[in-house]
Image (cartoon, rainbow, N blue to C red):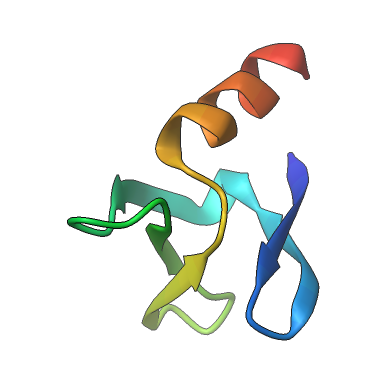
Length: 61
């Protein structure tokens, strides 16, 4: 499932099916996502949404 999230450059679409875990950046509202790319490499990306907001988006889908 794809979610529209936001990073420092604006909107970004993340395939949540490839996300292995996500966690809050300590002391901030931001979230670090860790996911596996199609080539099999592991990548992390920070988004502005909190983990609670992401969970709410997932439940709505």
